[in-house]
Image (cartoon, rainbow, N blue to C red; front, side, top):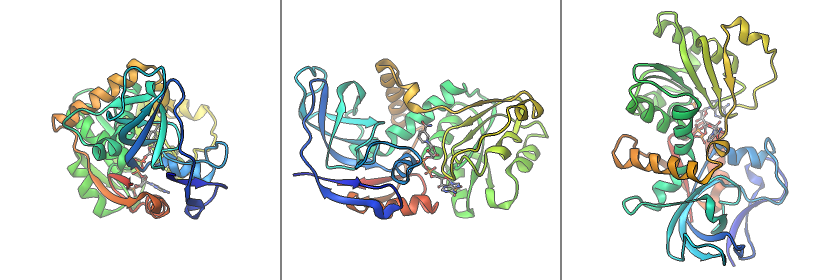
Length: 323
Ligand SMILES: NC(=O)c1ccc[n+]([C@@H]2O[C@H](COP(=O)([O-])OP(=O)(O)OC[C@H]3O[C@@H](n4cnc5c(N)ncnc54)[C@H](OP(=O)(O)O)[C@@H]3O)[C@@H](O)[C@H]2O)c1
């Protein structure tokens, strides 16, 4: 019987238990995958601690890659032995996982499963954020929070590849060097005072047309102060906690600003969107424009240690849970 991480009640990392589970059976349109590697993401923390909810017990995990073990009776596109990746849903912290065939990405011959598990969710997120939520233009200056993080490093490299000038924020001096390597022209260490003041200095007082903010509660209001008039605030995550409600009139006062709170799932809801996003991500990796940094690995059964490191801001780039 396979093993999986299970959460019977929400709470701290210690609530994740390594347990034997039933072997899952794929439905007619589903695929059973033997995971080779699982990607660590902040969304896993939200499900574990109850910020996002699902029925219990739950197995966290949205990103992984492995080999098809069995397919449902109606699945024609995949067969046992195929190498696939997936992004979204729950249940990835497991030796065996089920996904609908329509949600899988075939792994190109020149990429390995670890790379895909480290990048598929984070990289498709970067793709929709910089090419569809706001279309980043060559010569544009953009602000990216947590630039040395998982999504951050990929987003910064890709935005630079598109010709943008990237200002990144990081939590420490050590992370600043990594953000620079990821294409940031300027790096602001966020503990050194308000980010907005430094962004104004770096943009001759104008502000930036778009802010990518996955930190949430701690940075939201200051991020609004980084924007040029009619700029777009892209609030795409809650690493410091959920953004608190605020009066809409603030957006008028600060220059007719726009705010969006996008999720990957809306942007890859259709099969063709998923295929294109994954294809474009694999292309920038294959060209060498985006390098995937797997900076931490943990045995899957030690997922609690990985969560502690992620929440303590100790990780950089991508982290993998290995089976
Ligand atoms: N909307 C979507 O579809 C979507 C998809 C994927 C990810 N996301 C979001 O994107 C964000 C980044 O995800 P990730 O998995 O790549 O994580 P990550 O960026 O590798 O880790 C989070 C980073 O946030 C920064 N941070 C600032 N304040 C923090 C706090 N109080 N607690 C913890 N971290 C804090 C830290 O970097 P510094 O120390 O450098 O500040 C930390 O390393 C998350 O908010 C995630 O939910 C959203």
